[in-house]
Length: 312
Image (spheres, helix red, strand yellow):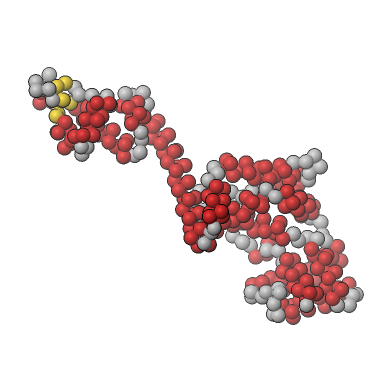
């Protein structure tokens, strides 16, 4: 063999950037075996060994393990096959790192306790499939009975929460709260009742009897109050609620007193469940949907204002 086509370990080190010690380790491991030895017993390598070392270094820098690299070098696996599998694995690692970063940001901003931090970490560690299974279990437990309303189930399933791969801190916090909520049996019963009524499009008695004109006026006034930041339990809410109570009392031929306010609150409470409202708000946040003002429930504000007046 022409000795000029062979390289010593030192020459390989200069050409590949790998240390002599590292090349010797790869050589002893059989990953890149010497082609021959010099008369003095020094290892010598040919051009194929040089190319194997260069490829080995590239794959190691990409994070591949030595056993996989050995199979690539021995042509048991193609570089394309290994690269595709490795890219998929890295995608998963990146998603997990993004979730951890989001959890840390929530912990830092909220000053979370160790228990809350552990809960957030555990719930966000779930894979996408496991998160879907959690919601599917909620759906089956809520609407999986024989007499379940298919329209109600379809309505809730159409807005399935799905935590993105790179969530914001707000989305992480919302997902954690949502995951706890859907596991509560009392909440499932509330959701089933509310969804059935909504899917059927049934009006409350007070809605039917008050008429669409007064209801639209009520929605408008409450939306304006919310937009202005008026607290339903504060003094600024008094003139708003007084005006609405008088308008409803006129339609129903009732006296706008405390008893009538209490009756109004009871009527509107039939369409309002705070926990169900909270569920839908959390779904909006987790899915990153834009909050549409017209879809924000107005009855919770109205009920609070009516109840506050009665308590006073």
